[in-house]
Amino acid sequence: MSIEKDIGNLLQRYPKLRSQTVKKKHFITGEVDIFDDKEIYWDSYSIRVIVTSEYPYSFPTLFETSQKIPKVDYRHIHPDGSCCVTVLQREILYSRRGINLCTYFEKFVIPYFANQLFFEKEGRWASGEYEHGTEGILQFYLEDNGARSFEEIIDLLTYFDDYNICGRNDDCKCGSKRKFKKCHYDIIKFLSLFPAKQRLADLIELNKLLLKRKK
Image (cartoon, rainbow, N blue to C red; front, top):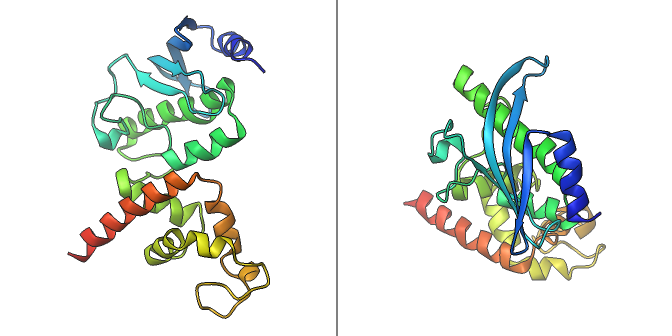
């Protein structure tokens, strides 16, 4: 499906939005209305979404332009003012398969603002909170990757190439004496979904965090 058709479907679903294309970038602006799970209206937010030429294999970037959300990191706002709708690693996973704009809004944009409103009312996040920065990377690997410990993540990322060439019926490289297929096979296959440069970047950040914790 073309980006133009995706935008058309989005504007039909969210009639308060409009779009403009400038130098191969698509800018979607306007308002989104937020309702609770009982379809009771809560509030509206003015937004700007930037969609680059890499779409659908890169995440759009969301900005909240109504200035209702404090621009601080614990409210999940990046230093450049963009909204942190999910962790980078999950963005990469969704982008690999290709993401359309309606799905992006349904799974990330609307829940992001609903969660912000819930936080303002209750002082906590509706579905728990992802940690910021490197702590968020660690949380992702522990919760989404199935790794059991910080040290295990470091080991898997450090020796990824060694694990990756291991045969399914070979002894796992971790030294457990279990077959690879019954030990770290699934985790390594999960890690292989990420580009090598991302695995390296995550390893560097996690090593920094490990050193910090040991001080």
